[in-house]
Length: 212
Image (cartoon, rainbow, N blue to C red):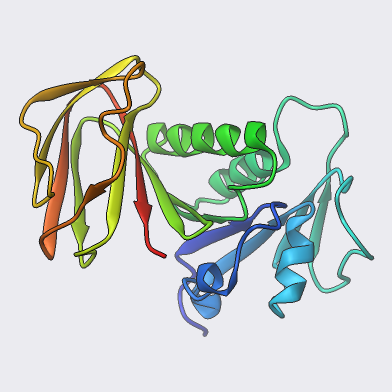
């Protein structure tokens, strides 16, 4: 029996992702889904998906014969990536890495931030990788930034007009401070410690970690 499959990796159709994003994938322990044109990206990096899903309006070439295929209607409520997430949830996955979901069309990037919130509300772990960054959604609780000393991190209210935060181990500290959506005070902080953290005391936040 092979290694246990624990993580679902979903590749979106944004072309603005690179090799570093794919280095995060342990292919033997991941279930790989390509959302429509995400198959184009997977092929560039020599990866064969377990499942391909979409209306295939942005796909180049033929569908792979070795992958499961789910064809969607062009007119639908979900984006292709959101549809992939729903299928993965139905199959029991609770740990997600989303690649190829930032850059490209701005509306789709924002929609994928909403997907992070949706996954958090389902009790899942999820991160969105691309353009040299990792993006997370954090509700009330503690987000740990271990091993990222020297990197840049930004925090914005998301899914709410304001969030109250406390920082530990960052260059510009905040204690029980309310960030509001109309003023981007949380942008471009620096992680000073090997073990830093962001506590969300009220509301919810989008945390963007710059790794390149």
